Image 1 (spheres, rainbow, N blue to C red):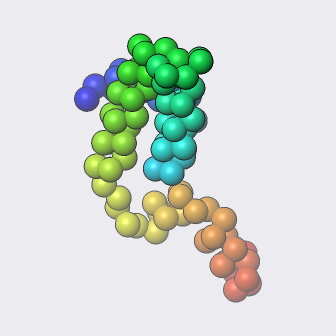
Image 2: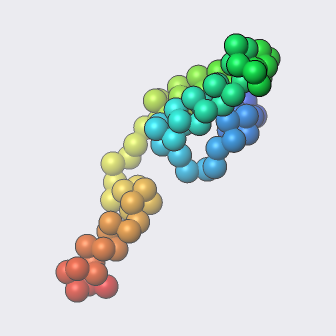
Length: 91
C-alpha cells in the first residue's frame, strides 16, 4: 500500500483523521447503501470505489501495532488521565 492510495481511501470514505473501526464500518455501511447498484441513488463504480477503500483502511487498522505505552494511551484518551490527576489532587 502506498500513502497516496491510503489518502485516497480516506477521502473516498469522507473520514476525519481520528476514527476507530466502528466509525469506519458505520461510514462504509452508510456510503455502500447510498451507492449500491440496487438503490435509486446507486452507482456501481462508486460502490466499487467505496468497497475497495473500506478494505484498504480496514486492513491498515487491523494491522496497526500499538505501543501500549502511557504516552499512546494519553493520546487516545487524554481526558481520562487528566481526570485521574484532577481527582487525586495532582492537577
